[in-house]
Length: 238
Figure 1 (cartoon, rainbow, N blue to C red):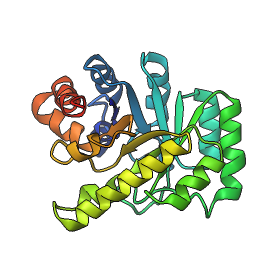
Figure 2: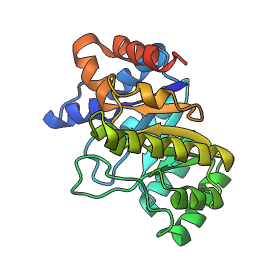
Figure 3: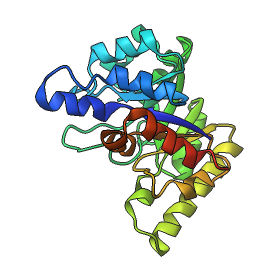
Figure 4: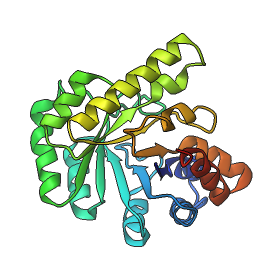
């Protein structure tokens, strides 16, 4: 299993003081050196953390892959077509949210997403959708021609051990199995940390995890490279 590191909250810390540190691009390079298979970053419409200059610098210096999370808007499509990340992950976005809440409703937005995904694909950009573990949503994503999906593990991650979390985990397992059956590459993420990641690691269809906040928080104590290596040790056991 591969680990992609989301660096957004290094930028959150920087933007809290509107200064020039910590440098999220440096954090990304350190994560790469510690074995991350790629860097994930969300350029939001409100620019609350990652800035346009961060994205362009990341594209210039990363040696692994750049996964750009973004809303399916005309502004973001233009930026993606200019910067050419390796992967674009389409996510829902609401101004009032603290972090991304829930997966993208693919079925409700099918008509607009089809041309959007096709335009990115023509530019040689792989397209992913951040999606809830719903068979209807996953099947629609597959029909739209995406290359991969990222299963939202947020519900599982927010629950304490017990029947409710077991049910949420079963939903992730079923979603991963269906996605693989449909020929999609399967990633997962949201809310995963050093304590709850092991059951997700055990899902055989999941090839890559995207983890951000918990690694950023751990980095404040032990440093970026140590935090990434600790997470890698947990996810590479299978």
